[in-house]
Picture (cartoon, helix red, strand yellow):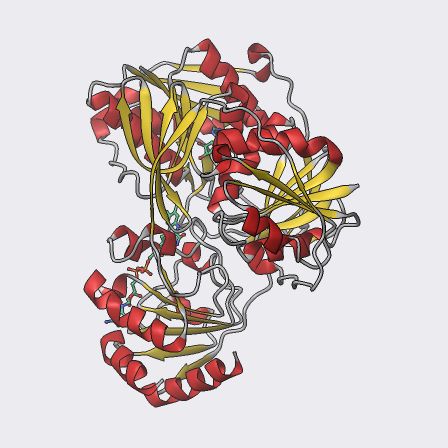
Length: 249
Length: 309
Ligand SMILES: Cc1cc2nc3c(=O)[nH]c(=O)nc-3n(C[C@H](O)[C@H](O)[C@H](O)COP(=O)(O)OP(=O)(O)OC[C@H]3O[C@@H](n4cnc5c(N)ncnc54)[C@H](O)[C@@H]3O)c2cc1C
Ligand SMILES: Nc1ncnc2c1ncn2[C@@H]1O[C@H](COP(=O)(O)O)[C@@H](O)[C@H]1O
């Protein structure tokens, strides 16, 4: 079974975000970038399926400028077999990303797609669902457990109120939640080996996808800041404050 | 043109987040229609028909929609879309799952998790865990929108009911099958609509200790939330996670106990009206957003609160 993992290059989750003074976007110059944490979980899950003898090949795909090859290399170091960078000068609407990924799924005969539930920069939470729609296949979003059985995927999903289990026909699209697994760290020899693994570069034209602009970013502003409050000196003071707050509700 | 709002429900009752979503929709000019897709959901449709400010309820009652699987429900919503320029749904996990699939079927974008309606095609939404606010304009003919419900108030109910029309179900996509569901039944208020939330973090140390917090919650009528660390450690189920990648809440009062205040946690609660933090580390970042902070050992404080509140 062939698995595609989609990995996005994003700001490191520990880095501090600054808004540009002209309010056109956030300022990412000199900021530490990393593989989106949910994509890392996707790669880990694919690698585990390969170690279990279920997956035969893992292809890691990233859409973006050349710099995203770094994140593809990270995925290769974690155990993916081949990388594909789809070259675009900026990262566009999720629907375009989904259309590009759909072409790769078809041309590479992919059986299972594993991707993040959410990119921690855009916070969109939509690309996987869009890809599943374009492929007209089943989707298992916010997955906390995966099992492959008789040409089906049994997926446990984190939903409001608890957990839900679905059975999906293959091919299918899975998006990862935090509890699916705990990703390993890449070992140094594997980082070296990853440099020699194949990494293809394709353009949207190569894939026959015409990128369309669906949204326009008009402005990016700082959120309103919360005023720091009062530090209390004793539990008694806390009780007094809580009592008056609760009474007001 | 009319606006379609998709209702959140469990086939028995309409969820309040639907009312916040309708408030967002009323900021665009047009009749509002509410879709109830479910199974044996007639009561929900009748409840919805009494919502103020709407003009029609569309009810699709069929076994196919019992669990609102994305494959079937998105097909249904897409099939109804030709009458609408706007389709709004609450950004619950259910509609985070379904709506992008609708958007892709219609070849349009989705604008996720809006916090403000600026005009019929322009919206505000937080990005980077709420560290920046983007103003986004849709260039598509149909706008697919999910609404951060904590950013909008609830519309009220009226005495009168609007008409309920029924629409037939489509056929089964056959792409996915429901296997099972484990939903916690609890008498506590729901995180998304609670006026008071008390949340615990890694500082609680165990699920047994978390009971201290739950007892206090019951005493003051609060919902219980948690940090990711507390969920990952298994102290509480996943649906209690508050934050960038969990639930976004904005109650009247949020009490954070043994939570450090990582940006991913703050992203989910910093719009609460009042924030109270209890942490033994005076440097904990949670204090930078708290209206009232107390540096103390939570195991000393919780029993006293239990007794005196
Ligand atoms: C992709 C991604 C997504 C994430 N999404 C979320 C999210 O949605 N929500 C979320 O919450 N986190 C999220 N996180 C995790 C986040 O970065 C933090 O790791 C997490 O919030 C920490 O939880 P905590 O505050 O409970 O634990 P810690 O950071 O370990 O803090 C525990 C606190 O308890 C205090 N404490 C300990 N003992 C006591 C005591 N006896 N009395 C009083 N205080 C005590 C300590 O001083 C400390 O401040 C995400 C992380 C990533 C990478
Ligand atoms: N530019 C991209 N390149 C590769 N994968 C992407 C890209 N954008 C989004 N994805 C995938 O889609 C997931 C969800 O992203 P989003 O819908 O933007 O929140 C990510 O975790 C990735 O797996």
